[in-house]
Image (cartoon, rainbow, N blue to C red):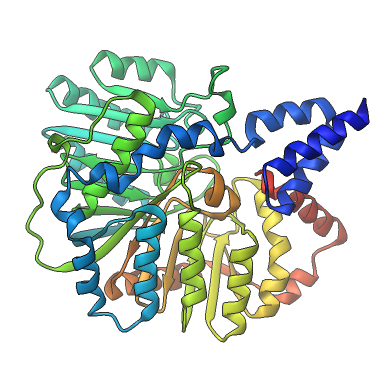
Length: 474
């Protein structure tokens, strides 16, 4: 019986065409937990995205769905791309632009303004003010939505707006928002707020989607103001909560054409959850007149994507850098391609700096990250532990010319399993601002050296290696 079980599980893994590391990790689980491992695999490990989910969302390729609504913007893409490329001397910018256009139907927008928030207090003060001014609709989508001091303030505004006739829609991730209280949901619904979990996994039919979490953060207000970035909805994003002295994060407030792209992504996620179609002119108002060109591409990826578009974005940013790369991510569990790209860049003389949290919220990915550090340090990558609080920012800047702010961590879960969204900004001023913020954060870091790594004891190294074994499952 055991041999039949072994042959069955090996065949199951081989047919999924996984990365070797993931295959061996799951094989280890099957051997150690014969029955329980198989149940867990069918719940969170099976590659369902090649099957029902992809069929369900294939017709919703963003550019195709938006073409009727944003016809002038979509039809002028080739012309806009050529016009913008005329100002760029860097060939990798042109390659990036075309990559995102092909791998995720990412639309290039040029008439935009933005504001970067590096503190939760600043972001939520601005958001609350914008919510109070909403006149037509409020669309919000978050991975984590708490029931706490901050959400009480937000709920109060949403209740008042809904009762005043403003359309309010909220999407939250069922697993990430597990502490959102049912009474809060019922209160919002009674006032007319449409609030739903994205792909509720708590039914027999949908339980296999447990491993595919919606990690996106999107707000669109009246079609003219948008928010996206790393911050969820919870008091800890302002004051660090009970666990942390400080919460360090990055978020964007957008106005202009890019907001329509955020709305398009929200509308697609909303349709996949509720079957209500929001892709009509009512939610895509006429563009504001914004004279200055600020090129932005918003890229969404997920288990329904044909390509791992955000991973490909990170890979090209790293491999194309000529002078410097500054990366912030709370977690660091790269796949082989990103790992190799970082080492290759550093060995080529590029100043590669990686900043991760030194005060972790999850121990296993923190330990697993250490197993990648030795080779990175040997290649010349500089690694920093941020110790002032919990670092949750997901940013990357390259050569003081281009930068990314988003929801995707530097780990395999964000690359392959989560629904993510990143904003790529082709602007020197914005890149310089992010670089300066990185250097300011560096003052609150401890730089990890080869001596630090060498001082790790045998138990710590064994613990870290064991954690890495499960990294493909995290």
